[in-house]
Structure formats: structure tokens, C-alpha cells
Image (cartoon, rainbow, N blue to C red; front, side):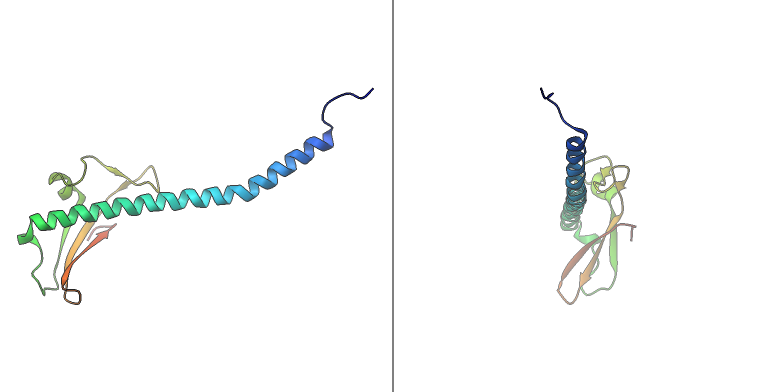
Length: 124
């Protein structure tokens, strides 16, 4: 009479197969998570730039003159004070321990004949 159950060889085979699946799947999942965090960060920066454009349209007197090579820097605190972005710190989705800081540089492009809004991670 045979006893029911798994042999040691069968258990080892299952563990090896699961290990191989893990080795294949883990890098893919990690890369997908990193890409999604980067996309979330890019979306937040896009929203900050949109808020800066609204600020620029409300504060045209503070923008650099057309044809000028000067630029204006506005901070995230300026946008918060103008109620253009949420109050409080904006978390960096790439690193949950960091917050998004920096400023937006506004300059006039004579090549494109328009204002250019650039997010500067380390400030202007």
C-alpha cells in the first residue's frame, strides 16, 4: 500500500520552479514600479508648470520683458501663497522620504516668441 504525499524530490522541484519564476518576474515588476513612479513625478512637475503659467498670466508685470535675456524665478511657496497649488509639502513619488522643492524659471524665448517655463529642481 502506497502512502499519499509529496516526496522530497517533488517539493524541491516545486521550489526550484517558483525560484525561476521569481527571478524572471521580480526585475519586470521592479522596472514597472520605477517607471510608474517616474511618470507620477513627471505629472506633478507638469501640474506645477501649469500653475506657474497661471501665475504668469496673473502677474504679467513681473515677467521678463519681451526680447530680454533675463529670467524670473518663482518658488513653489509663491505658487502656494497664490493658491495655485495645494498647501503643504508635495511628496516626491520616486522617494517617499523626499518632498518636491525647487522653483520655476520663466524666460522669454526670442526663437519661439513665447515665455518658457522650466522646472529647476535645485532652484534658479
